[in-house]
Length: 424
Image (tube, rainbow, N blue to C red):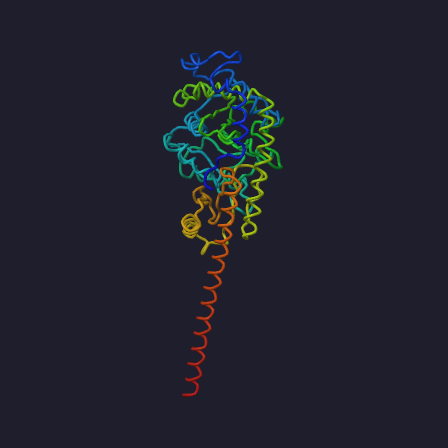
């Protein structure tokens, strides 16, 4: 339950592949082999057919409220590669990126390891549902300045990993205004955009930027960059298909050159361009995938609730942000680690502690639900229920033992006081 992988609609993809054997066999519509064309050198910018279909699919997920130009798209070997490439383009070693927490654990690797860039957390708390407040945003910016770090941008995940929530237009526009005021960039990682299964609907940073008041700033779009992949929406992480979208031609040019270090294979592009070109398939997949995600999420939330465990209200993603603070023996991250070890070793469930997402409050856990079948999830929920009941029983026993000990000590003290009184 620690892997954010979407297997709920894999059968739909497999069904399409069975119905289109020529594509799998690297043949065109006339049944002729395209193996030679794909095996030889391709344009490092990516196959035009694939880029055209990809931007159409991106627009479709966003309700066709925004359009994307394939010339502003840079392919990368997954969102990991895309995020790193973008940071290389926007920042120098020693510069800083502001990142709301809790945040995706892999960002420490993706944004820092090779770029030399520092991450400054924007601390969000449960008091407002972990939303980004302007106070927290300003506080993080000021903290970076005190550390003599030059802030180059803010990176958000929308929908959020690990929260499973989406941002409102007002929230996004506040971030854009902040970026304009501070003369920095805004990166929106939207890899979970196709997993939104409930209201409110997903709003892309690009849609929020189309507001007439913001567009008066002529360079607003040059500050905004999107990272996307097909790993979560289509459940194809092994295909390693990611991308950067930017209206900043300097960024596009630099990222295109750097994409040579993480290309998407030509046979992958060929297969997916044919799949995405089938509009009937993509429409059916999006609709059924969202319905399945919603049903599975509700199953997890309902099962946890029966065990006295609540989740943050969410409308997207492949996971829930679960509140287990009441199961901690103390309000510390040491206690969170102890609880995680018990759930892992005694219960046999691999869930992710909030500290791995740099959450500022102990006791929160990310629990994934889309990488297993329904019967496996039911087993997991039974194990959690049994664990909570055992913990509650042990707690009551310990409290009973403590009460008896306190009463015994109290009686002894009273008896001692009585004897002293009699001796007087």
